[in-house]
Length: 65
Image 1 (cartoon, rainbow, N blue to C red):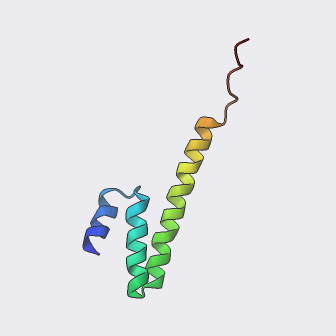
Image 2: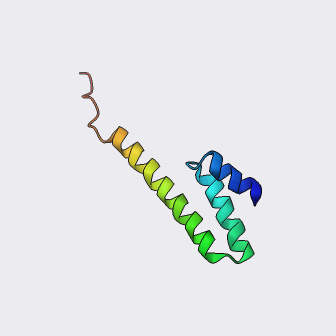
């Protein structure tokens, strides 16, 4: 648990660390802490999806003829 908590501290934008910590909390029966970590994972993925969408939301250039 300590290693995963430290990983989250060092890189809070890393969804994998949050997910693994959430799974550990879930296994230990700490439902509230697990839900918090899983919510963080969802939020990080949503931000990444928005960033990708912003980069691809413009129309593609016209095809050469």
